[in-house]
Amino acid sequence: MAADKEELKQKILEFATKKAKHKSKMYIKDLYKADPDASPRAVKNAANELVREGKLEFFSSGSTVMYGVPGFGKPLEEGEGE
Image (cartoon, rainbow, N blue to C red; front, side, top):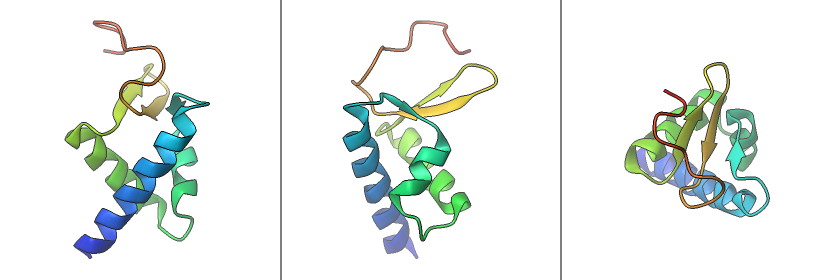
């Protein structure tokens, strides 16, 4: 199972990096497209693990949660989103 999770994380990271050239922030629903065969829960858990590893960034406006690749798009300002 660990190999599957690592493979899913790699697919999500590749998908997000490719999309980041056009769209710096993505909804979790966008990340589901990285592996249509994976369950939404597995994708969300893998994405959250990538955030903990520092490979993805987490953005929240209070009502909306988005993910992004560090270094793409507008940087998160100090105190913004908290």
